Image (cartoon, rainbow over all chains, first blue to last red; front, side, top):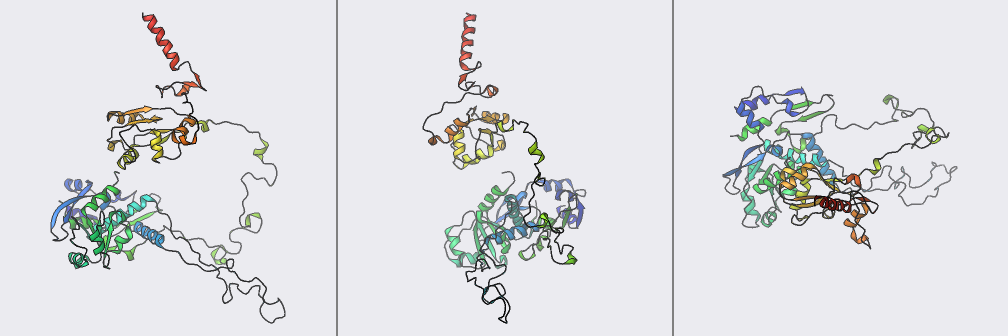
Length: 249
Length: 252
């Protein structure tokens, strides 16, 4: 039933209305399937980090993990993050900043050369720059609520791409890199490990591997999520994220 | 039960929705298409800057849309609204008139249950002692307070603490929620000097007298003495006691 419902969504629908809710077409649906659509959360499997076997499930809220995939918001958020991290240490001298003599080099007439006022004007070798860059911050604003929504969109994207994995916990026995790498399958590719707090073992073992990023739940961000192939969340981090991002709060 | 693959299928749609005006378009795309090298903004989200003075063909060449010369064609021109070329302006010829009571309005800063709940969770408020406006001021939960704080009922569903609280005002439902939980909500009156002494006592080298409640607020603060400029009013506590005495005598 549900698959039939989903097929009906696969066509391209263009229509005029206020938002997404209008563009859904419920006419061909059955009551049970419709009820599942209106539920606020859905079940998602949890796997064991070491054995990769199914160990229970968790309720993911649709507010956080099933929002419409707004590429424009992701674009804005990535631009925002990149601009904020830009150092902006570029500098050159313009005419006003240049500290050289202002004496007229040759007299106005009779020298046989072109007339000139200073030796360090814009068109001279060693002269000033016309539109010189200065040291500045490139950061720009993005509303707080939009930023929150962007994180939800990024999480929903990973789930929709089938690249979201939830593990019970990162139970490592040592700080050795070898142990962590052996636990991550090759199919996961470049993966981002997110825990509620980064433990000593997880931090140290993931430090020197290019293909692994580890972040605490509070440091989770859109750019890092998109940089990585697979997003691996621990159960505790999912609970903290949902509490932080869900609409009810 | 929801199968994962089916959930994923439900995402694989392209939806383009237009507003009534047809001006703004929001595009959400297939999940397989979303990646770091494939991001873009909505069409029409960014408008390019108009470049003036770049040739006849642009339509904004030569005079750069400013017309031929004069005061308004210069950089930084700014002519005040009522300027009449140096002649005395009309509004300056007329006398002043009019009055508004707006600046005497007694505006209370709002605070809601969700903020109280958060402060208590973060151990910035102790729910066991009486919460006064001084505590809220020290917790930085409102901006500058001019006349006092009023408790409103936003987030009352999630508030589960029993508290004693003293504020300038309570909304009806806010008072009800506090009393339903077994707490006490009491109205207290402070004038501007009294509030300042409450918040910043170190700035005073004397203790100011507690102000009496103006007659128009007498109903809101039944526990306070009413009066004006230091004098007891006819509705004051002293007067009430005399009435009670008389009544007792009459009954006897």
